[in-house]
Length: 435
Image (tube, rainbow, N blue to C red; front, side):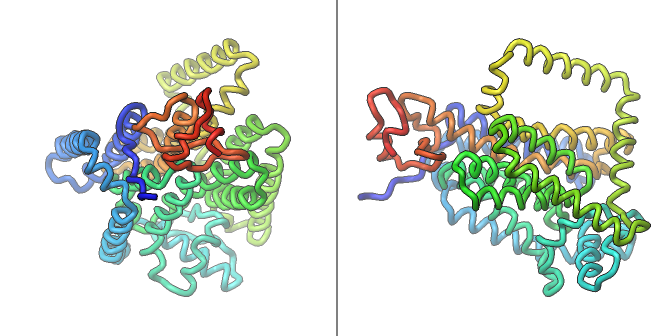
């Protein structure tokens, strides 16, 4: 049988979703341009966003170019370039600490690993004098730092590969490659990669957690459930406030799967609580992650004093209550059909609140907007939601659309189906007939 060419995924509804993803990645580059964009950062940023969208529009209208971008070799080349860029940029960014600049997130991770292996109190203070907010769960993904100091150079590429593997669980190879590539035009992602930030890893841990847990519970797959639960645990214990995000995401799992969701949620919440309490008991006076709890309360207090923010919150709550009243018993059905977007909301809403608070605290100066990094935690969840939507949209129709990945719903879960499989669809257009 002749090999099938990569599907064209960039037109119709799928093209619209991919355009949203590209636009989000470009817009998140705002801090880079206002910090390094020279005397005219605003026009430079606007030109970058417009030019990026125009280039993407050209790609959408050139099927041969879109097919070329969907190749795995292109993603491999992009990873090689990323590795080379980080290998050059990270040592320079790390050296900025000598003049009181740069980021101390990588140093906090190093200190955590070093303290645990030396049997000292795990948490320390960054070179800016701020308490390290790194949680105990960071020890696992960054343990190789104990053997190789250059490990931080390869972490961003490993995170992208992890993300690609997660997306492959939901869609075909071509779509997974294209969604993975959308991260590279984002200067926020590149800046975090060059400074050794752990936010990229944390974001993909959440994506792994929601995807693997959902598929594991749906398929009764123990390996996937354990993988998802482990990712949830590492995510919840990377920053103390993310324990609340994990709980909110766990509520979504319970809404979708009922009591069966406790198979994942209960061990995660118990394990995360045990880790935090245990590390606090070891050295209560130096429990640095606890300062984020106070910071979260301060964020809510400060935002609550803003009348505009209060009105927006009331409007959102009113809309939510109205939706529940209208949907009534159909609310659970809506949650089950759109749970990926609810997971996205669970992580993005609190991070957006922190980002807005930080921007207001910095006098609305984008160049000093450190809180923008928290918004990136929602990007992997967005990619997962778009990958899942491309699957469900394709499976729902009677006739396969040429602009969406060739996905089919097969038996106990969702897996990619070959284009030839669509020829075996039953008379009523049921994709399961091809399985």
